[in-house]
Length: 119
Image (tube, rainbow, N blue to C red):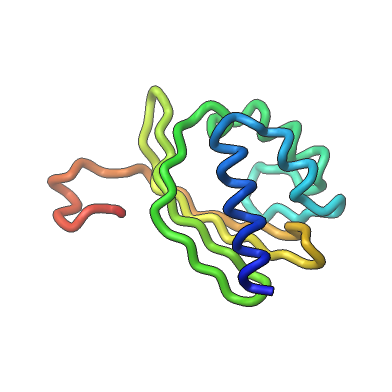
């Protein structure tokens, strides 16, 4: 289960990062639950929201993947024209679909503030 969940999320991340936002329709369960404040739950509402969110046009540079049982965690740099963010996404899967999502997002500080780096 861990390996197939990891592959599903990684393939979806690659498609999304390449600009294919509609891949979310095939990845997310219809009753998808979103835990990030301000983001809607439900597959269709979430996909519609993501099409207008800053992440849709951002460069995503994947740094780490952790997978265990029904959870897959991605750690990546998100670059937009106006900001650099460190992002951790946690995805829970069931029966080959993503059913829940949590994230932690923070600005990437200047290198002088993080001598060992964010990534």
